[in-house]
Image (cartoon, rainbow, N blue to C red; front, side, top):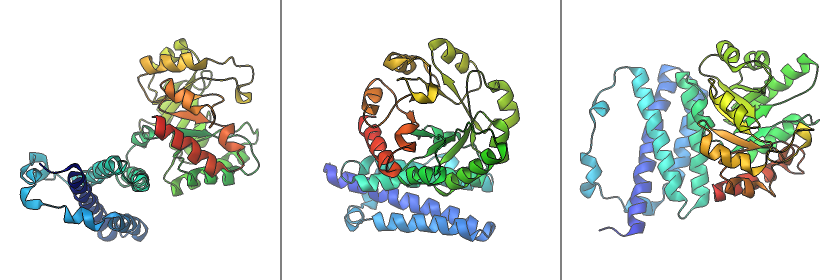
Length: 341
């Protein structure tokens, strides 16, 4: 029987090879099939990063002759019906390999694990663009959700948070000038695309459509979910705020993709709204059937209490939007979410 360390090295070696091989298959289609130099180069950069992570000790642990997995196969692996099947199979192969790498790397190299996690997000975005698929799978991977507020340096603050690892942004503005709203939404959408992050628009389905946002977030008194879905289509993300078990049940009875749960604490963002407290968070743990984010007065000082109550994801506003260093604060909250999640 192999010792534990050798077994882990073999797992890392096999999955580094698997991820690189899958990426090369995707890269070749971008290069020769689509003549897309930019995306081919993106795949190449990821392959090179994986090569840098492939330590010699991982390779030395390889034992192909005695690997019981070499004899395992499945009929679906022997044929591909079409080009889409080839691309989908290899994208899935890369995603699965990166997840394995992330989990086993956590045992000894947190930086390696984080690199694999960020690369997995890139591949989800790659899949969405290449196969024109829904951005919804990435939603379940997001633990931190930033809702913007009206600060002067809006784009700079959001970019700083994205540099800190943020993967989900909602543009929320009470500005009456629709031209300004559109310009800000477009700037943030372009920014989120560069950082492989999801971008949603609060309330305004029309603006979400105009900038090709990944979806919208609706309040209980906004446009009904049914009509928003008819306008946006089945692949876009639609989320909705809930403040009570009754509102949660109402939202869950619609074609919703996620819900907000709160406000956990009283907050100026929702002036006059009574806090629902951690009890509602605990209720969501037992009753929510879609991804959900606790929201309301959450910051780096109390996020661990919310996570201990059962939340896997949290949404914040002021904690990042008015932070002295949004990148550092984002990293701080994500670290606490990862540690307690």
